[in-house]
Length: 199
Image (cartoon, rainbow, N blue to C red):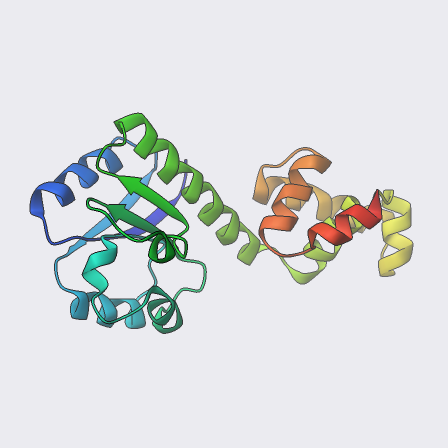
């Protein structure tokens, strides 16, 4: 996966942090920058100043600060949050995280959970690289419109539409309408209700 990821591991136990780092290093990612944090104040300062893609955190470490408060203070709205559960924690706390990793999960389970979130992160990064026009064309494709209909609808030439579609495929590496539909829903280009009206 050709992606530059910045990950924070916020956990007081050096043994647990080392284990997570070892698993992250086994993932098929071209470049990963991993920062280990022991203190919640240091974490809050970092989140407000620098953009990170993934936070793996022991929920008990947050102390008086809620996850919602951390999300508001974060410099990256698309950052994903993983709860690192190593003790009994109330479900009302865990439900706000994007994923939960337990100390009892196998290496395979941990990898799968992290890779699923990384795929969503990569999708969000690719979404940011799309132009407004390309996003409009994705929505038209999902609606089932032909190249000519898209061209008429957006006041473009058919050749320009084909060129935009080629760029979209190159950027996203998505080759099917179903794949574009999933991408559009995940990145909030369309809602699930809108998709139902297109069918």
